[in-house]
Length: 402
Figure 1 (tube, helix red, strand yellow):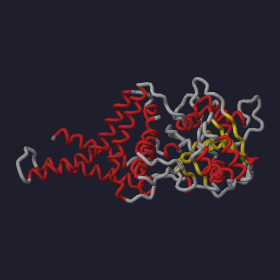
Figure 2 (cartoon, one colour):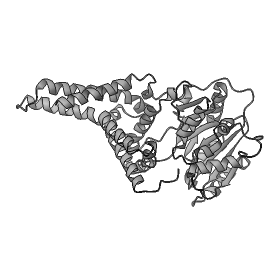
Figure 3 (cartoon, one colour):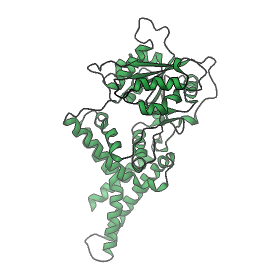
Figure 4 (tube, one colour):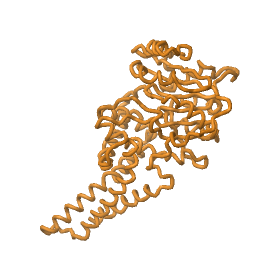
């Protein structure tokens, strides 16, 4: 019992520390829609949109028109890089542009075979960049910005205008929106808010946006990147072997002394990808979970044990303390009522703090407050996904295209 009380105190300290974190990562802010500048640029810069796509013909029907019809006053065009798709992605993109009467705004780039040392998504971005003038002898004619976005991302009509306005007003070299993920099915309601919660605990947004802090990241679904920043970091070649390319991109850009910003999106940038089952989310997470730990088994052990202590012990200690206290009132079980009550209080307060700091995420996704109590279960599932990712790496299972 004494050991449990020590762990209970440790867990309580963990959640007090999170609640008092100076960056307040748990409040799901900043959101991009809250900080759009009203000071529009005198001259609108040019933008090239790059959409890496592999077997995305169906979802492009919903997302590509939103980009082709952007309410952007400056010059912009869209490139879909078809990375050897088997579902007629290229022809589907061309047909969509024809239907939208914006064929002159769309370029379809046929992807070449994947070279050794590159990952699929970054290789697609590299080909798109080369197609619009990068890596030539002269930098003349390059777009001022690249908008890197995924095939499943829908953009509000003023999304590009807001991103550029903010970037120009704040002199941002990289301006990223974390797309609002779909949260409709039971699996999504259980696992998507924790996915974002864990991410922003690892990369507190206010610290990412603070030039004085080393913390850096971006969200690959929507990144407005200045061409000069891309050139300074060495182009997409600097990311060629990075499965978690978006976080690496943020680190590289911030690492050369440029200003970056990462914020959540409530309405303007949405992912339309459907995760109807736990298995579909499991497959998504296990692709890069062990990569995030830099393939370190020591980090894996620390992560799994740390998550178990922080997320599983509070409800467990609360329930055990409650049971021991109740049994003590009936029979002598060798555990004092005071110790049982103390364990119950430690677990209950820690669980209450955990639920309280998670509630902003529950509200962000418009869920009922009762979902706040589901975080321990979600954490257990994410621990299992991380272990699965590590064991798949051990068995040399191929990582899906990124």
